Length: 77
Image 1 (tube, rainbow, N blue to C red):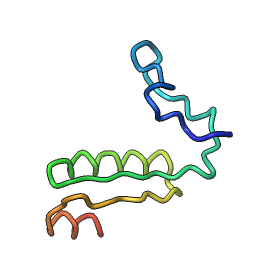
Image 2: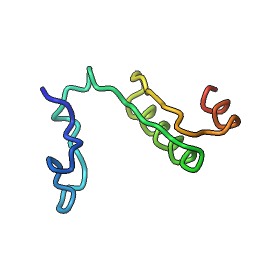
Image 3: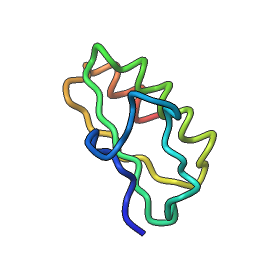
Image 4: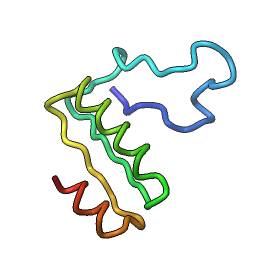
């Protein structure tokens, strides 16, 4: 199966449903990748907590695109 349709040209986000049905996709090979800068660190923590709750055995690749030193230390714990 192909990957999730993240291109807005393939997603119809202007009419219901406003979500992607992940049951249609092969999640065994799916990778969670995200990034954050210092002004979006708190939101990224919420995202990661949600992923860990729903997919406890999946790796999350997290890119630092401008975190401060305290946030980097917190992210590594």
